[in-house]
Image (tube, rainbow, N blue to C red):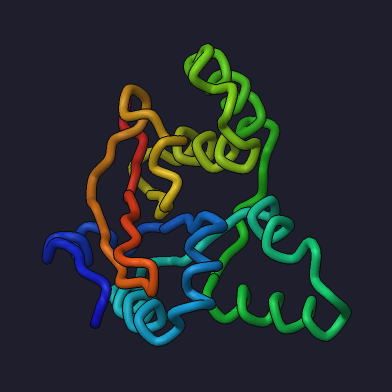
Length: 165
């Protein structure tokens, strides 16, 4: 079984950056073959796989020992092409997002706020792949594609988001 997506997804992501949320890495560790095929298809058209240090922190924390830490770090580095730095502009946009989310932002994790801030900062040059679809309000972000991946627990659904306002 493969990851299912619309045929327009790959051409759309050509030469763009695709931010990966924490859950993508965790799911890829469980189903490496199907995720590798998907990621390699994207990389073949020039899509840059990216993340942020906060995502890396979430993945690396709690490693049982130095060897497990190194294995996780190697796994992350096999997937990503770039780590996008959080600039002062990103933090400014993060505060803006907090204001825009209002009460609905109470449960949004800091990592997701910063991923959203980068979407705002880089506009149409960057998209986000996440399974945390409730953390990216469609009042703020555009849900462009839905991606379905088979999982032992059923089907995991991911959203591909962009900021275009």
